[in-house]
Amino acid sequence: MDDTSEKIAVRTFRQILFWPLQLMPLSAPRAQHWDALEEHSDWMRLEDDFPSDVGRYRERHYREFVAFLPHVQRFLYGERGGAASYGESPLRIYRRKNISAVRVRAPDETESRTFRVKHADVYFFFDADVIIPVIEIWADDIDLDIALDTMNRFGRAYPSGWDERGEPANCFDSVEWLDADGAPLAQSDLGDIERFYSAVVSEQVVEIGAHWDFLLRPMRLHRAGVNAPVRYRPLEFHRMPLMAFLAVDDPLRLTRAEFVRLAYSAAPGPRKALPMSTAFLENFEKNHCYDRYFDPERSDPDWLNMRIMCTAQAFVMVGRSGDPAYADPERGYLGQFRHQFFMLGMIAHFHRAAVLMMSNRLVEVIRRLDPGDGRTVGRFRRDIRNLSAAFLRFTHRYYFSEVSDQAVLRDIFKMWSTQLGTAALFQELRDEVNDGESFMEADLLRRQAVTILQLTVVTMLSLIGTVTTGFLGMNIFAHADLPPWDRFQIFLAVFIPTTLLTFYTVMKSRRLANFLDALGNERASWALRFKALAHVWRRGEGDFGE
Image (cartoon, rainbow, N blue to C red; front, side, top):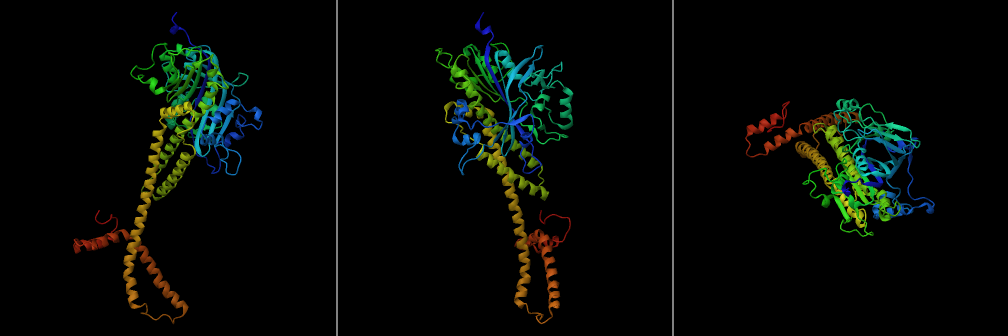
């Protein structure tokens, strides 16, 4: 039998899901979103990787720490000691304590598959309304088709549709979270078509699967009628981005079609049949494969022959299971996959999620703006100022273009960010924020111009009375010898009409400005000038000359 017709065994399989979500604002001004998990029995805050006993420190953690540049180290791990230190890391990580495994059943299959859950965590970011739930599952000695099917079906927040039998498209028929004893904690309901239809029809909101809803409790999906301390909503497509690590007996046995299916986390199929057109995949190796250590022409035992692939959907590593340099969990690429490369993915997906979150917030700010309503204009100025400040803090605290000087990590991060299109989204958001600030500045200048116009008109009209009283010397009437009460009454008799006249002049300042403009126009006839003067007291008309 030909090699290409034999099944490929995956000796070690790891899959990590990222699920970027937007957090809705809290009602309490000083509260933090992670407060809801602090006292919850199903969650615990994950302590950092720096134990007080140095003997408990592991080399894989040290390798992870030194892989990043100092400014990224401070972001990921914080800094201790000294009055001028960076302080704690802005990351808060909480781990679900009661989920130990997940049992799934594919369509047309009677038996279920069980994967161990290494961890189910939620990453919070200080001063950013974004969370990223992370779920890592693993299994040993499974078929490549099973690995592909799991990569394709598992990370779907809700179905994209259903087939003629009512089964959710490209999803598992059943997903169950299991505790340490193997007892089910929650089960999916992706086949409940009415539930998903109802949410879209009544609220134009896409419901999520019951097993994902359970995973994030007490946090809940943002929708009408949901009363929860923390609410979230999806930011992107229903397919969660993923990372996958596969250790096989011989990576050279994999066909090009299988590499393509892995890179795009596509469904399994014939080993030599491409899942997409030849023209579409013409530049697959150039755009999506990092073949620094992959060369099919080299077969010497010391050569790693590890292929790394990266698309917008998945980051995948494939290598030889018998090579410690690849499969060792402490010093090999398996350890780097779960630490250095995982952190690269976390940063890359956080960058994209934060930009999308701020873009959504900007849309909300614009939606509430009514240029004809002074109250909404004032609120818009305040919201734009706050959003601009948040964008500035994100740019200087979190947005890195360089994360490592190690060649592989540096290249992979650039490749990953390029696939996600983060740079274009970031520039688009920057332009939108600048547009909002420009509008705010233009509106402020317009208001200042109106104020200056009003003051100018009042000053010009007051000039007549000022010159007249000044010429007469203010001694027309001798009131200096009158009693104080009489003088006070005379003061009020002059002060009140003058104040009312000034206010009235301000109210009519725009029309008076038009009259003064017509008066100063040498080409204007006296009829037009008198018409402009009469226009000052007409009601319900716009500015003269419009």
